[in-house]
Image (cartoon, rainbow, N blue to C red; front, side):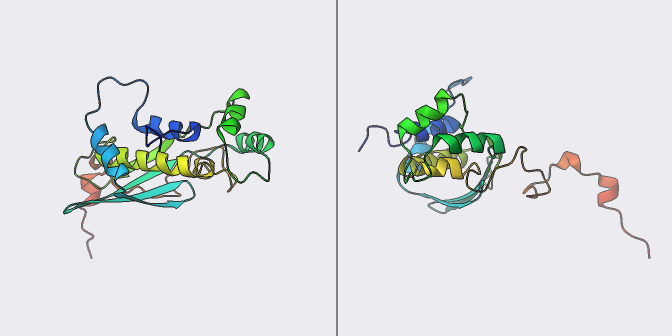
Length: 186
């Protein structure tokens, strides 16, 4: 077993960087707990195209975290397809190096993230644990790194808009109280 349980392949390192960016203003105190949660298998993920739904049960608490990734553009997918042999069963670090040599960026980018926990913070404990769980899954199956970014589905050149997936939370500032509480007169 490698010394680092998360990101021990070049494919998985990109996913660890979602939780541990190289540029941080201050230390993140939740990272050890997030690694522990993911390392103990408490994160259950369901993957659908570029969407990940993670459920985390700890004691009497349960949280659901949604993460949507920015899909790769069609030209990027075509360029990657030229570099990876069609009969490749698994992706190696050499494949990742070849993609990087050609200047193709495949590091994941988050389009949207949301969690049902009470933290109401973009980088809550559950989001961080989900990032680590995804890094471990990508280490085990490197193809997942590309599939989560729309490689097999063809990708797109734009981020999925609000029309494709409705927002889970409505910001209070977006509501008009006068129109919201208006009672129709019969």
